[in-house]
Length: 187
Image 1 (cartoon, helix red, strand yellow):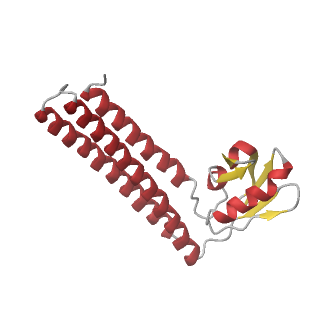
Image 2 (cartoon, helix red, strand yellow; image 1 turned 90 degrees about the vertical axis):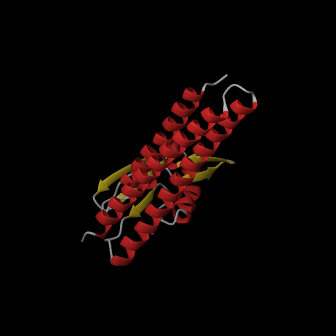
Image 3 (tube, helix red, strand yellow; image 1 turned 90 degrees about the horizontal axis):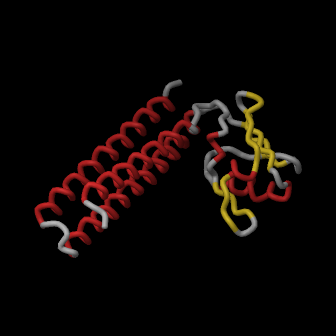
């Protein structure tokens, strides 16, 4: 049976993973420069399963404003192209039958605003992930109370600690988003 400390440590760890995942994702939102991070985690429907682009193709940036995706299996070209268009990144993939070229447009004011929307969406997804971890941890603590393994006071303290962790991680997410917005709006 898990102890309160185990539950709190596990939840903090999961929340920190969500925050570091967001940091990685936001680093992929380059301000006008081509980066494999921009497309590598896009989910592609490939033979009935979803795969990340990086798992089914090589991604390179031969030029500062161009991403080239060469799939291991040429029959997946269409699926990759469709997934990139569906990802709503404001980039248009060009399929030449062998590989996909993704030119990165100059960052216009409109493009910057689109990227900020993408950053906000990514941030919100991780906020939701953090809240889900909080809910799971809270449920585990309440289960311990039901099993009479802890007292109500222990439960209340544990729930407070979990909420503090949640608040800290959400603040980190908000700070990262604010920094990314600032970076994107600099001309």
